[in-house]
Image (tube, rainbow, N blue to C red; front, side, top):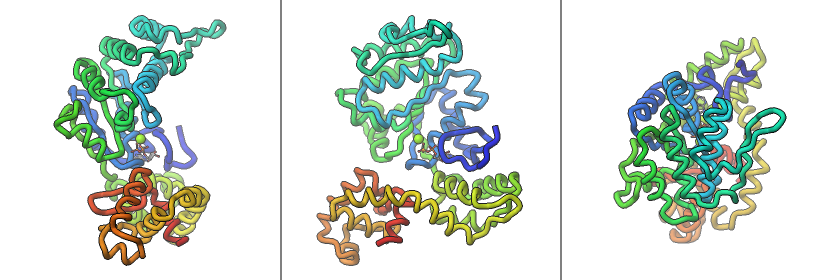
Length: 376
Ligand SMILES: Nc1ncnc2c1ncn2[C@@H]1O[C@H](COP(=O)(O)OP(=O)(O)O)[C@@H](O)[C@H]1O
Ligand SMILES: [Mg+2]
């Protein structure tokens, strides 16, 4: 498959459109094929999902394992988790033939009621609502029993795993942990973007998942690898690009994958075949991208209480704000007291509007940050 624009901004397409991650790919494959479960952690949009998809399509994994991928960001209970997992397994097995599906429903009897075969086409479907799952725990037991004898070993990636902390039922962690611990043929990748919650889950001695996984932090793609990737795709498509612009974007956005991709997607689309993409086009690209988000930015800001708004603006102006509760910072931006700043910052962190790295605060969405800086 050949894309009109080689800079993919959502999902995973193929190795050709995927930049580097060679070490990470090797390590992740090595972990799970050697019976180790992995926690994969990075800030959002750094490339966890892409990396998992990339590993899943590799020859070592594709031919030897069943792979499943669920994103539990929007789930709020074990019941929803079980539903998402059951559905994903069904969807993965469906194209692989009716024998696998028969086997699936013969083990997972509690989901059988939702299984339908279209009378005309013979096409299988799974028509179950959340409400049809009576006993989440019992269905989960069945799903695990199935996975353990699915013919091939299984790898299950659970994206936004930190979400289980907010589940309605008590003891979800312990229930999952004890099921996972018993697996001999099923391996897990737990991906998550909230570092402090993920660390809490896997690195506190009192918690069920303590020391049960290899921890993998996903950092940036190296500037060299990314420069080569951009140059190659421009040249393959009969366009030139200044190396200086690649480095400038990389630095400005600290190598954060999604921002790089969307900016080069925009720059690529602005460059006519036969032409060269130069530094002057960067402003135009950024203006386009930020104005596309202007409405959302205004909406978010207008809904914030005044105190939080003031601090968000202060952090945006600072870029990387150090010691936001210090007297100096409070004075510089005419804020009230350090303690009121502290509570407002806590809300901003909870709403994912602000991110904290040690004692440094910045606006989570870079484009939002730039927009605030330009408008206030
Ligand atoms: N190695 C890569 N090369 C090119 N684009 C990538 C790469 N990794 C991720 N992306 C792109 O960056 C964006 C964010 O990646 P994603 O995997 O969804 O991040 P995360 O799961 O950490 O939030 C996606 O649009 C994806 O297409
Ligand atoms: Mg993801």
